[in-house]
Image 1 (cartoon, rainbow, N blue to C red):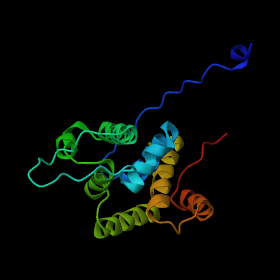
Image 2: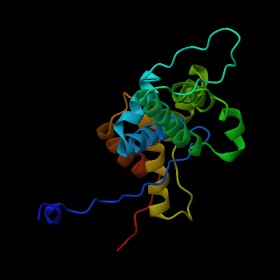
Image 3: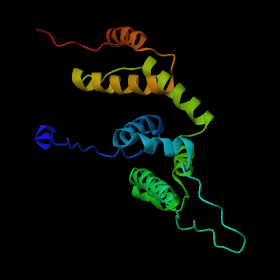
Image 4: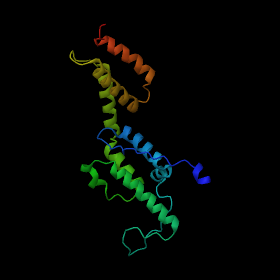
Length: 189
């Protein structure tokens, strides 16, 4: 009787977010959500590194990690490999060879961050470019209101990620001003 009361497990499928050049911040939020949805312990491996330390090889041995000796070490190795696999699946094919030989998940995350995250100067330049695009936003005479709005919302989303002090309320108010000031024509009835 007890087996009949248990509902069947819910199966969910999520697409692994693939990182794109210049979109590290958004990708990192999405991949973290994906990993936490899969198994929250996987995210801990990225944040904390190996959960179960393996003994370091003695001199004269190769640098390959030793075979796990305990059940805990075996579970830690499997978890580490699972996280590395997820992160490697999120990298476009043209960059895969550069990341394939990274030792562990934490190091892989840092390598991805350094490759796709950009440095302080490039982020500052990207913020300035986005602010300039926001201030000078305009639409073409043949562009539909839907397309202009979608373009503007994408610009706002990028600004919110890169410039934390921008708030949705400020952007929404500014959105109306920009649309009215830059001649976005509303359809007439």
